[in-house]
Image 1 (spheres, protein in one colour):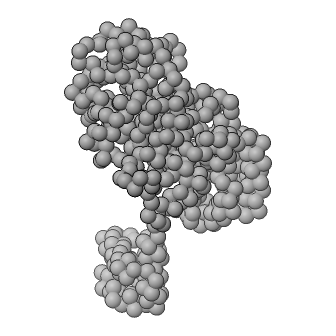
Image 2: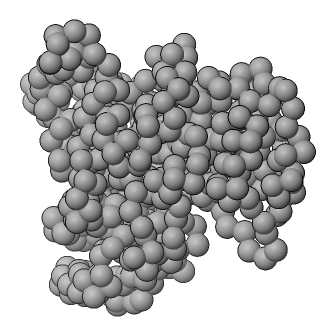
Image 3: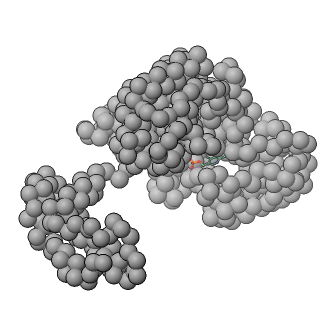
Length: 475
Ligand SMILES: *Cc1c(COP(=O)(O)O)cnc(C)c1O
């Protein structure tokens, strides 16, 4: 048995490690502080391990042959330093087939949107100056006309995200007063956006009407009083009720709102500008339909079905939008120039729906034909078969999801590459290796099978994906 206390004294000091060529080399191109931290952490990890063994009656076999040469520790520190120097937030391959994946950054942007961000990042821009008059302009002007054009609304304002849009709208229209909402629409979205809580934070009092499954027009009318400030309709985007249900249509609620001179606010959640049912998907309410139906304000996200950057978009009546813009919180929730650039470029694509379908990744992924997916899955399977041993590979039929709390019931038929290790490595270990790989790959694991869905993988990513899977298998 080794004397671990004696080994502890043999551990090289930080200075000694930093004199190793591999670390001297790292310090030429990495920040010195990161190399130093890596050396300190490596030594301290060894110290902990040895102290742990010292307390054990029967240390593991591997512990007996522990090598404490500075060169070995320096190699480990060099690897750690390289890892520390890499970006924490980085690109990865989404092989899950979930198109709007909130944990994976929701959606990739159209290349026009990326180019627009690049342009304003590299240069000064007319963010808040009118090039016609030379006078101070509003950053909102770059988006308002386009949004009105596409939705038929009178005015528009864009804020940080849709949660902020709902919050700001309620604060501007109804702080200290009452807002009427159907019980069936008091939803929670994404774990932290809950209608009752957003409303409380905005200073508006929530008046719940109806029951969980049924709410009628008369329920809304019964609670109207002098202190009522607005009706709020929430699109229950992330859950789906079946059975005996009743919701009041936007047109009906709009006429009731009109009768009492109250604004009707509709939170559409995702917000869709093009009809999904044309592509075999369940119909979602269109933003322009809500405006036509009489909603006074409609709010939706920039980075769900719209396929743009994170943003909350409010469109509707000019007098109400101007109240929102003047609200003191508008400045705190405003969008930056990168968001404006990316959103403008994305919205411009919608001016020609054919372009939108081709150039906006979320639409391209949702409307790709099953034949194409089958061809790509078969091609991936064939290439993987050439790289992997002891694995069963097949192409099977499966389902992709829209995700992001949009269209929870929609099942998009797809073809999956299903991989199952036959011996050696466990599939859960491959999944973990893939997650830590370069680039990381995120996929579904179902009953010991790794499932790769080509729907959310760009063709340019396929080589990197195959290399990553091969590397993860061999570890
Ligand atoms: C997603 C969603 C939100 C929140 O939107 P973010 O842009 O993520 O802040 C609010 N309301 C509904 C109905 C939603 O679906």
